Image (cartoon, rainbow, N blue to C red; front, side, top):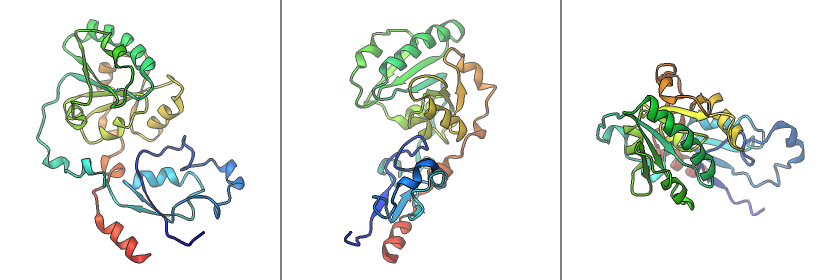
Length: 246
């Protein structure tokens, strides 16, 4: 209303299953874009996110600019991080408010790993705001390694061979770390998000009762979306040029 330029920075993941970023075509006639609170310019982590936004129509008046991975904790180049040896680890980044679903999955997975792969560890990193940590710790299995805020996510991902999730942000974080991303399909109320992980080649499909370690030879990590499409190299000039232009 006051003709003030509005810039938005991507501050998380975007999904075609979410409102606000990719409305389905059938609802667009009911949206008055002149009155809606969409940015004049939206800065993105990478080209990958443009593809999601273009599946909706509400961003048609927004300038989409790829600025790269400008999140502070990610600014250290992967090339500068120490080399770590891969271990026989299945990494699971537990999601907030999904303790019942993840604990149920662990109760199924741990006996399978114990029987078929005694030299493997299932490592679970709890969400920073997890309220039901006691349910995870109650599992008490010799091949279960529970981590919380004391552990660095990128270090854990660089050591793991496999990651299992439903649709966690850690699936994106693992790209480029030589990790086999697996998304449990047809499970939980968020199965549409999980299906999207497969459609966008962020992860490979995993059945609830399948042996994830057996899939190491079936799926090829190189077929997943390259990290540089999702998280481009940070370029501060993109911000400067757009701000100077406007």
